[in-house]
Image (cartoon, rainbow, N blue to C red; front, side, top):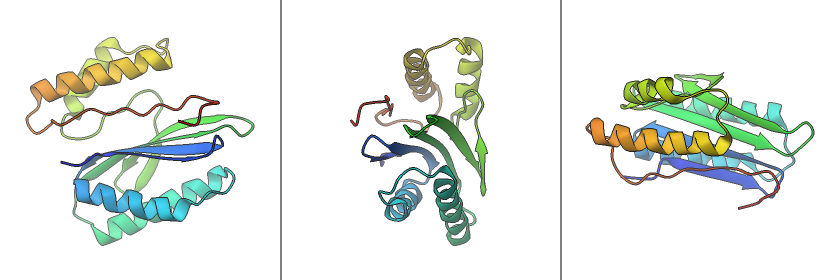
Length: 159
């Protein structure tokens, strides 16, 4: 059992968080390699997305048959401020419009969120919905267990 939540932040400028589902060692390998390539330069969305795509291509080349999903959240305080969420589909990095579930409990999580989620939820309320959903999935789905961690970025705070 390993942590499958990884965060990387450059001062108060920008940051990235990755939640993984699947092989924990593969998750660790991916985020370690990505962390080495990100650096501490100013936020450049195009450059960041290219580094993510290169890292994903390398992951899929090295481990073509391993089951592995990810959610990638990015933020930037640069003008205009950026907050985006992506899901990794195989080799594709696609935008998430509303909410997204990954892993072996995703069908249960999708059902719970479809019954409760509304676009009017605040970030704090969405955070609580996510934690509630994960707790219920752990109660229902065999193989979903371990501690629950959440990452949240607040503009103007560096921790």
